[in-house]
Image 1: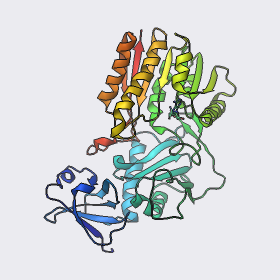
Image 2: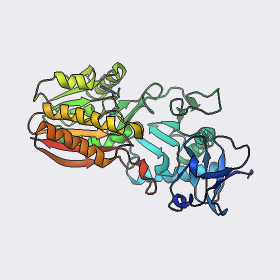
Image 3: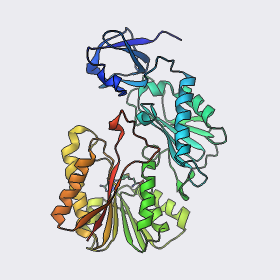
Image 4: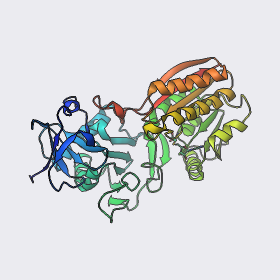
Length: 397
Ligand code: SAH
Protein backbone atom coordinates (compact mmCIF):
# COMPACT_ATOMS: atom_id res chain seq x y z
CA UNK A 1 0.00 0.00 0.00
CA UNK A 2 1.37 3.41 -0.87
CA UNK A 3 1.93 5.90 1.89
CA UNK A 4 -1.13 7.90 2.55
CA UNK A 5 -1.43 11.56 3.31
CA UNK A 6 -2.39 12.40 6.85
CA UNK A 7 -4.60 14.96 8.45
CA UNK A 8 -4.45 15.90 12.10
CA UNK A 9 -7.50 17.43 13.73
CA UNK A 10 -7.61 20.22 16.28
CA UNK A 11 -8.20 19.20 19.91
CA UNK A 12 -11.85 18.25 20.60
CA UNK A 13 -12.67 18.19 16.89
CA UNK A 14 -12.59 14.39 16.94
CA UNK A 15 -15.88 14.07 18.84
CA UNK A 16 -18.14 13.80 15.81
CA UNK A 17 -16.00 10.96 14.47
CA UNK A 18 -16.57 8.90 17.60
CA UNK A 19 -20.25 9.23 16.71
CA UNK A 20 -19.39 8.03 13.16
CA UNK A 21 -20.32 11.27 11.41
CA UNK A 22 -18.73 11.01 7.96
CA UNK A 23 -17.84 14.67 7.31
CA UNK A 24 -14.91 16.76 8.51
CA UNK A 25 -15.17 20.49 7.97
CA UNK A 26 -12.13 22.58 7.05
CA UNK A 27 -12.22 24.43 10.38
CA UNK A 28 -11.55 21.19 12.29
CA UNK A 29 -8.18 20.59 10.67
CA UNK A 30 -4.94 21.47 12.52
CA UNK A 31 -2.48 20.28 9.87
CA UNK A 32 -2.23 18.34 6.63
CA UNK A 33 0.75 16.47 5.24
CA UNK A 34 2.63 18.24 2.48
CA UNK A 35 1.55 18.08 -1.15
CA UNK A 36 -1.89 16.67 -0.44
CA UNK A 37 -3.91 16.54 -3.67
CA UNK A 38 -7.67 16.87 -4.02
CA UNK A 39 -9.33 13.48 -4.24
CA UNK A 40 -6.55 11.69 -2.38
CA UNK A 41 -7.29 9.09 0.26
CA UNK A 42 -6.09 10.39 3.65
CA UNK A 43 -5.74 9.03 7.13
CA UNK A 44 -7.41 11.15 9.80
CA UNK A 45 -5.78 11.40 13.23
CA UNK A 46 -6.91 13.06 16.44
CA UNK A 47 -4.71 15.74 18.06
CA UNK A 48 -3.13 12.97 20.18
CA UNK A 49 -2.53 10.93 16.98
CA UNK A 50 -5.23 8.36 17.66
CA UNK A 51 -6.48 6.85 14.39
CA UNK A 52 -10.00 8.05 13.56
CA UNK A 53 -10.78 7.12 9.99
CA UNK A 54 -9.91 7.15 6.31
CA UNK A 55 -11.50 9.41 3.75
CA UNK A 56 -11.35 11.40 0.53
CA UNK A 57 -9.74 14.81 0.84
CA UNK A 58 -11.10 17.82 -1.00
CA UNK A 59 -10.74 21.58 -0.77
CA UNK A 60 -13.86 23.41 0.38
CA UNK A 61 -16.08 23.48 3.40
CA UNK A 62 -16.42 19.68 3.70
CA UNK A 63 -12.73 18.76 3.56
CA UNK A 64 -12.95 15.05 4.21
CA UNK A 65 -15.63 12.48 3.54
CA UNK A 66 -14.93 9.43 5.66
CA UNK A 67 -15.03 6.12 3.80
CA UNK A 68 -14.07 3.85 6.70
CA UNK A 69 -13.61 4.04 10.44
CA UNK A 70 -11.20 1.07 10.19
CA UNK A 71 -7.59 1.39 9.07
CA UNK A 72 -8.00 -0.43 5.76
CA UNK A 73 -6.92 0.12 2.15
CA UNK A 74 -9.41 1.90 -0.11
CA UNK A 75 -9.03 -0.39 -3.10
CA UNK A 76 -11.05 -2.64 -5.39
CA UNK A 77 -11.86 -4.97 -2.49
CA UNK A 78 -13.10 -2.11 -0.38
CA UNK A 79 -15.53 -1.04 -3.11
CA UNK A 80 -16.61 -4.66 -3.70
CA UNK A 81 -17.46 -4.96 -0.01
CA UNK A 82 -19.44 -1.72 0.09
CA UNK A 83 -21.26 -2.33 -3.21
CA UNK A 84 -22.26 -5.88 -2.32
CA UNK A 85 -23.61 -4.62 1.01
CA UNK A 86 -25.65 -2.03 -0.91
CA UNK A 87 -26.85 -4.61 -3.44
CA UNK A 88 -27.97 -7.03 -0.70
CA UNK A 89 -29.91 -4.29 1.01
CA UNK A 90 -31.89 -3.61 -2.20
CA UNK A 91 -32.48 -7.33 -2.66
CA UNK A 92 -33.71 -7.70 0.92
CA UNK A 93 -35.97 -4.69 0.49
CA UNK A 94 -37.59 -6.48 -2.46
CA UNK A 95 -36.67 -3.78 -4.96
CA UNK A 96 -34.89 -5.92 -7.57
CA UNK A 97 -37.60 -7.75 -9.49
CA UNK A 98 -38.53 -8.36 -13.14
CA UNK A 99 -41.34 -5.82 -12.75
CA UNK A 100 -39.04 -3.30 -11.01
CA UNK A 101 -35.74 -2.70 -12.79
CA UNK A 102 -35.30 0.88 -11.60
CA UNK A 103 -33.59 1.40 -8.25
CA UNK A 104 -30.84 3.36 -6.57
CA UNK A 105 -27.96 1.01 -5.81
CA UNK A 106 -25.76 3.48 -3.94
CA UNK A 107 -27.01 6.49 -2.03
CA UNK A 108 -23.88 8.27 -0.80
CA UNK A 109 -23.56 8.47 2.98
CA UNK A 110 -26.63 6.23 3.31
CA UNK A 111 -24.51 3.40 1.92
CA UNK A 112 -21.27 4.43 3.63
CA UNK A 113 -19.94 5.76 0.33
CA UNK A 114 -20.05 9.55 0.70
CA UNK A 115 -19.88 11.34 -2.63
CA UNK A 116 -21.15 8.43 -4.74
CA UNK A 117 -24.52 7.79 -6.38
CA UNK A 118 -25.29 4.78 -8.57
CA UNK A 119 -28.72 4.38 -10.16
CA UNK A 120 -29.78 1.28 -12.08
CA UNK A 121 -32.08 1.47 -15.10
CA UNK A 122 -32.61 -2.04 -16.36
CA UNK A 123 -29.21 -3.05 -17.81
CA UNK A 124 -27.61 0.38 -17.43
CA UNK A 125 -25.91 1.76 -14.34
CA UNK A 126 -25.49 5.53 -14.08
CA UNK A 127 -22.65 6.58 -11.79
CA UNK A 128 -22.55 10.10 -10.40
CA UNK A 129 -19.62 11.44 -8.38
CA UNK A 130 -20.20 14.30 -5.96
CA UNK A 131 -16.59 14.38 -4.73
CA UNK A 132 -13.23 14.54 -6.46
CA UNK A 133 -12.20 11.37 -4.63
CA UNK A 134 -15.05 9.36 -6.12
CA UNK A 135 -14.24 10.83 -9.54
CA UNK A 136 -10.65 9.66 -9.23
CA UNK A 137 -11.77 6.22 -8.03
CA UNK A 138 -14.35 5.78 -10.79
CA UNK A 139 -12.55 2.96 -12.58
CA UNK A 140 -12.10 1.03 -9.34
CA UNK A 141 -15.82 1.51 -8.72
CA UNK A 142 -16.65 0.24 -12.21
CA UNK A 143 -14.54 -2.89 -11.63
CA UNK A 144 -16.18 -3.49 -8.27
CA UNK A 145 -19.65 -3.00 -9.76
CA UNK A 146 -18.93 -5.56 -12.45
CA UNK A 147 -17.79 -7.98 -9.78
CA UNK A 148 -20.87 -7.51 -7.59
CA UNK A 149 -23.61 -7.56 -10.24
CA UNK A 150 -23.30 -10.07 -13.07
CA UNK A 151 -22.44 -8.90 -16.57
CA UNK A 152 -25.92 -9.94 -17.70
CA UNK A 153 -27.48 -7.69 -15.09
CA UNK A 154 -25.52 -4.53 -15.82
CA UNK A 155 -24.24 -4.29 -19.40
CA UNK A 156 -23.68 -0.54 -19.74
CA UNK A 157 -22.10 1.86 -17.28
CA UNK A 158 -22.58 5.57 -17.91
CA UNK A 159 -20.56 8.08 -15.94
CA UNK A 160 -22.41 11.37 -15.42
CA UNK A 161 -20.70 13.91 -13.21
CA UNK A 162 -20.26 17.07 -15.28
CA UNK A 163 -23.05 18.78 -13.39
CA UNK A 164 -22.10 17.57 -9.91
CA UNK A 165 -18.35 18.23 -9.96
CA UNK A 166 -17.06 21.73 -10.42
CA UNK A 167 -13.40 20.82 -10.18
CA UNK A 168 -11.73 17.51 -10.92
CA UNK A 169 -8.22 18.58 -11.91
CA UNK A 170 -8.99 16.69 -15.08
CA UNK A 171 -9.69 18.84 -18.14
CA UNK A 172 -10.42 15.80 -20.33
CA UNK A 173 -13.28 14.72 -18.13
CA UNK A 174 -16.76 14.40 -19.62
CA UNK A 175 -19.98 12.43 -19.27
CA UNK A 176 -19.39 9.13 -21.06
CA UNK A 177 -19.96 5.41 -21.18
CA UNK A 178 -17.18 3.65 -19.28
CA UNK A 179 -18.58 0.25 -20.26
CA UNK A 180 -20.84 -0.69 -23.19
CA UNK A 181 -22.89 2.10 -24.75
CA UNK A 182 -24.10 0.30 -27.88
CA UNK A 183 -27.63 -0.89 -28.47
CA UNK A 184 -28.69 0.48 -25.12
CA UNK A 185 -32.31 -0.07 -24.16
CA UNK A 186 -33.47 3.16 -22.48
CA UNK A 187 -36.72 1.65 -21.21
CA UNK A 188 -36.93 0.35 -17.65
CA UNK A 189 -39.85 -0.61 -15.41
CA UNK A 190 -40.98 0.68 -12.05
CA UNK A 191 -43.65 -1.38 -10.31
CA UNK A 192 -44.72 -2.70 -13.70
CA UNK A 193 -44.92 0.70 -15.42
CA UNK A 194 -42.53 1.45 -18.28
CA UNK A 195 -40.41 4.58 -18.38
CA UNK A 196 -38.04 5.90 -21.00
CA UNK A 197 -35.03 7.16 -19.05
CA UNK A 198 -32.88 9.86 -20.60
CA UNK A 199 -29.66 9.70 -18.58
CA UNK A 200 -27.76 11.50 -21.35
CA UNK A 201 -29.74 14.72 -21.20
CA UNK A 202 -32.23 14.37 -18.33
CA UNK A 203 -32.04 15.96 -14.87
CA UNK A 204 -29.94 14.19 -12.23
CA UNK A 205 -29.35 10.63 -13.46
CA UNK A 206 -32.50 10.81 -15.58
CA UNK A 207 -35.34 9.89 -13.24
CA UNK A 208 -36.60 10.67 -9.74
CA UNK A 209 -36.46 7.19 -8.26
CA UNK A 210 -37.07 8.51 -4.76
CA UNK A 211 -40.81 8.98 -5.36
CA UNK A 212 -41.48 5.31 -6.24
CA UNK A 213 -43.37 4.32 -3.06
CA UNK A 214 -45.22 7.62 -2.92
CA UNK A 215 -46.38 7.15 -6.50
CA UNK A 216 -47.64 3.71 -5.58
CA UNK A 217 -49.61 5.15 -2.67
CA UNK A 218 -51.08 7.75 -5.01
CA UNK A 219 -52.34 4.98 -7.28
CA UNK A 220 -54.63 3.85 -4.44
CA UNK A 221 -56.21 7.28 -4.20
CA UNK A 222 -56.65 7.93 -7.92
CA UNK A 223 -59.84 6.03 -8.76
CA UNK A 224 -62.45 8.24 -10.44
CA UNK A 225 -60.59 11.39 -9.49
CA UNK A 226 -59.61 14.36 -11.64
CA UNK A 227 -55.87 14.53 -11.07
CA UNK A 228 -53.48 17.45 -11.49
CA UNK A 229 -49.79 16.48 -11.47
CA UNK A 230 -47.76 19.64 -10.99
CA UNK A 231 -44.00 19.55 -11.72
CA UNK A 232 -44.54 16.27 -13.57
CA UNK A 233 -41.01 15.91 -15.08
CA UNK A 234 -41.13 12.37 -16.58
CA UNK A 235 -44.78 11.86 -15.68
CA UNK A 236 -44.25 9.27 -12.94
CA UNK A 237 -47.23 10.26 -10.78
CA UNK A 238 -49.41 10.65 -13.90
CA UNK A 239 -48.76 7.09 -15.03
CA UNK A 240 -49.67 5.65 -11.61
CA UNK A 241 -52.82 7.81 -11.47
CA UNK A 242 -53.96 6.51 -14.87
CA UNK A 243 -53.32 2.92 -13.82
CA UNK A 244 -55.22 3.60 -10.59
CA UNK A 245 -58.35 4.46 -12.58
CA UNK A 246 -58.31 8.26 -12.56
CA UNK A 247 -61.05 9.94 -14.53
CA UNK A 248 -58.71 12.61 -15.91
CA UNK A 249 -54.99 13.35 -15.47
CA UNK A 250 -53.39 16.70 -16.33
CA UNK A 251 -49.59 16.95 -16.18
CA UNK A 252 -47.84 20.31 -15.86
CA UNK A 253 -44.16 21.26 -16.10
CA UNK A 254 -42.49 24.51 -17.12
CA UNK A 255 -39.96 22.56 -19.18
CA UNK A 256 -41.12 21.58 -22.67
CA UNK A 257 -38.60 18.73 -22.62
CA UNK A 258 -40.21 17.35 -19.44
CA UNK A 259 -43.67 17.51 -21.02
CA UNK A 260 -42.32 15.59 -24.02
CA UNK A 261 -40.89 12.90 -21.73
CA UNK A 262 -44.21 12.69 -19.87
CA UNK A 263 -46.15 12.28 -23.11
CA UNK A 264 -43.78 9.59 -24.27
CA UNK A 265 -44.09 7.65 -21.01
CA UNK A 266 -47.87 7.85 -20.99
CA UNK A 267 -47.90 6.58 -24.56
CA UNK A 268 -45.56 3.70 -23.63
CA UNK A 269 -48.05 2.44 -21.06
CA UNK A 270 -51.46 3.66 -22.14
CA UNK A 271 -51.18 4.31 -25.91
CA UNK A 272 -53.39 7.26 -26.80
CA UNK A 273 -55.42 7.32 -23.60
CA UNK A 274 -57.67 10.36 -23.87
CA UNK A 275 -57.83 10.78 -20.10
CA UNK A 276 -54.36 12.37 -20.17
CA UNK A 277 -53.36 15.91 -21.21
CA UNK A 278 -50.14 17.84 -20.60
CA UNK A 279 -49.22 21.50 -20.37
CA UNK A 280 -45.86 23.23 -20.58
CA UNK A 281 -46.52 26.08 -18.15
CA UNK A 282 -45.37 27.67 -14.93
CA UNK A 283 -47.03 25.92 -11.97
CA UNK A 284 -48.02 29.10 -10.16
CA UNK A 285 -49.63 30.60 -13.27
CA UNK A 286 -51.44 27.35 -14.02
CA UNK A 287 -52.89 27.11 -10.50
CA UNK A 288 -54.01 30.71 -10.67
CA UNK A 289 -56.01 30.35 -13.86
CA UNK A 290 -57.81 27.03 -13.21
CA UNK A 291 -61.38 26.98 -11.98
CA UNK A 292 -62.14 26.25 -8.35
CA UNK A 293 -63.11 22.57 -7.78
CA UNK A 294 -61.67 21.53 -11.17
CA UNK A 295 -59.51 18.84 -9.56
CA UNK A 296 -59.92 16.47 -6.65
CA UNK A 297 -56.37 15.15 -6.45
CA UNK A 298 -53.39 17.49 -6.75
CA UNK A 299 -49.71 16.53 -6.61
CA UNK A 300 -47.17 19.21 -5.75
CA UNK A 301 -43.62 17.95 -6.20
CA UNK A 302 -41.51 21.03 -6.92
CA UNK A 303 -37.73 21.16 -7.29
CA UNK A 304 -35.77 21.96 -4.10
CA UNK A 305 -36.76 25.55 -3.29
CA UNK A 306 -33.84 25.83 -0.81
CA UNK A 307 -30.57 24.60 -2.27
CA UNK A 308 -28.64 25.91 0.77
CA UNK A 309 -29.36 27.19 4.28
CA UNK A 310 -29.34 30.86 3.20
CA UNK A 311 -32.38 30.26 1.03
CA UNK A 312 -34.62 28.77 3.73
CA UNK A 313 -36.81 31.80 4.36
CA UNK A 314 -37.68 32.37 0.71
CA UNK A 315 -38.17 28.66 0.18
CA UNK A 316 -40.69 28.45 3.03
CA UNK A 317 -42.61 31.33 1.50
CA UNK A 318 -42.53 29.47 -1.83
CA UNK A 319 -43.95 26.31 -0.25
CA UNK A 320 -46.64 28.33 1.52
CA UNK A 321 -47.66 30.13 -1.66
CA UNK A 322 -47.75 26.95 -3.73
CA UNK A 323 -49.77 25.00 -1.19
CA UNK A 324 -52.15 27.90 -0.62
CA UNK A 325 -52.90 27.97 -4.36
CA UNK A 326 -53.76 24.25 -4.22
CA UNK A 327 -55.92 24.62 -1.07
CA UNK A 328 -57.84 27.42 -2.75
CA UNK A 329 -58.63 25.37 -5.84
CA UNK A 330 -59.09 21.75 -4.76
CA UNK A 331 -62.64 20.35 -4.70
CA UNK A 332 -64.21 19.43 -1.33
CA UNK A 333 -63.19 15.89 -0.35
CA UNK A 334 -60.03 16.31 -2.41
CA UNK A 335 -56.59 14.95 -1.72
CA UNK A 336 -53.27 16.80 -1.93
CA UNK A 337 -49.92 15.02 -2.15
CA UNK A 338 -47.42 17.75 -1.25
CA UNK A 339 -43.63 17.36 -1.12
CA UNK A 340 -40.37 19.09 -0.35
CA UNK A 341 -37.06 17.63 -1.45
CA UNK A 342 -34.99 20.48 0.07
CA UNK A 343 -32.46 18.96 2.42
CA UNK A 344 -32.02 22.32 4.17
CA UNK A 345 -35.71 22.40 5.18
CA UNK A 346 -36.72 20.22 8.08
CA UNK A 347 -39.86 18.12 8.26
CA UNK A 348 -41.22 20.51 10.93
CA UNK A 349 -40.49 23.62 8.86
CA UNK A 350 -42.19 22.14 5.82
CA UNK A 351 -45.22 21.10 7.85
CA UNK A 352 -45.44 24.59 9.31
CA UNK A 353 -45.39 26.15 5.82
CA UNK A 354 -48.23 23.84 4.76
CA UNK A 355 -50.05 24.59 8.03
CA UNK A 356 -49.88 28.34 7.29
CA UNK A 357 -51.21 27.79 3.80
CA UNK A 358 -54.09 25.65 5.13
CA UNK A 359 -55.00 28.27 7.74
CA UNK A 360 -54.96 31.08 5.16
CA UNK A 361 -57.32 29.08 2.95
CA UNK A 362 -59.65 28.41 5.93
CA UNK A 363 -60.23 24.84 4.68
CA UNK A 364 -60.57 21.83 6.98
CA UNK A 365 -57.41 19.81 6.42
CA UNK A 366 -56.45 16.40 7.80
CA UNK A 367 -53.10 14.62 7.47
CA UNK A 368 -53.58 11.08 6.14
CA UNK A 369 -49.95 10.09 5.58
CA UNK A 370 -46.51 11.48 6.29
CA UNK A 371 -44.17 10.41 3.54
CA UNK A 372 -40.43 10.10 3.14
CA UNK A 373 -37.73 8.57 0.99
CA UNK A 374 -37.69 4.83 0.16
CA UNK A 375 -35.35 2.05 1.29
CA UNK A 376 -32.97 2.47 -1.64
CA UNK A 377 -32.32 6.02 -0.38
CA UNK A 378 -31.40 4.97 3.17
CA UNK A 379 -30.49 7.48 5.86
CA UNK A 380 -27.30 6.67 7.71
CA UNK A 381 -28.21 6.82 11.42
CA UNK A 382 -25.05 8.83 12.08
CA UNK A 383 -25.70 11.28 9.24
CA UNK A 384 -29.18 12.74 9.73
CA UNK A 385 -28.44 15.30 6.98
CA UNK A 386 -29.15 12.47 4.53
CA UNK A 387 -32.87 12.78 5.19
CA UNK A 388 -34.25 15.13 2.54
CA UNK A 389 -37.57 14.01 1.05
CA UNK A 390 -40.72 14.70 3.03
CA UNK A 391 -44.32 14.73 2.01
CA UNK A 392 -47.85 14.98 3.37
CA UNK A 393 -51.04 13.47 2.05
CA UNK A 394 -53.89 15.77 2.99
CA UNK A 395 -57.66 15.38 2.95
CA UNK A 396 -59.31 18.70 2.29
CA UNK A 397 -62.98 19.46 2.95
N1 SAH B 1 -42.59 14.80 -9.77
C1 SAH B 1 -41.47 14.45 -10.63
C2 SAH B 1 -40.18 15.14 -10.25
C3 SAH B 1 -40.26 16.64 -10.23
S1 SAH B 1 -38.72 17.41 -10.49
C4 SAH B 1 -41.30 12.94 -10.63
O1 SAH B 1 -42.04 12.23 -9.95
O2 SAH B 1 -40.42 12.46 -11.34
C5 SAH B 1 -39.20 19.08 -10.60
C6 SAH B 1 -39.76 19.51 -11.95
O3 SAH B 1 -40.30 20.82 -11.77
C7 SAH B 1 -38.76 19.63 -13.09
O4 SAH B 1 -39.18 18.81 -14.16
C8 SAH B 1 -38.81 21.10 -13.52
O5 SAH B 1 -38.74 21.29 -14.91
C9 SAH B 1 -40.15 21.54 -12.99
N2 SAH B 1 -40.29 22.97 -12.66
C10 SAH B 1 -39.40 23.79 -12.06
N3 SAH B 1 -39.94 25.01 -11.83
C11 SAH B 1 -41.22 24.95 -12.29
C12 SAH B 1 -42.30 25.89 -12.34
N4 SAH B 1 -42.18 27.12 -11.84
N5 SAH B 1 -43.47 25.49 -12.86
C13 SAH B 1 -43.63 24.23 -13.35
N6 SAH B 1 -42.64 23.32 -13.34
C14 SAH B 1 -41.45 23.67 -12.82
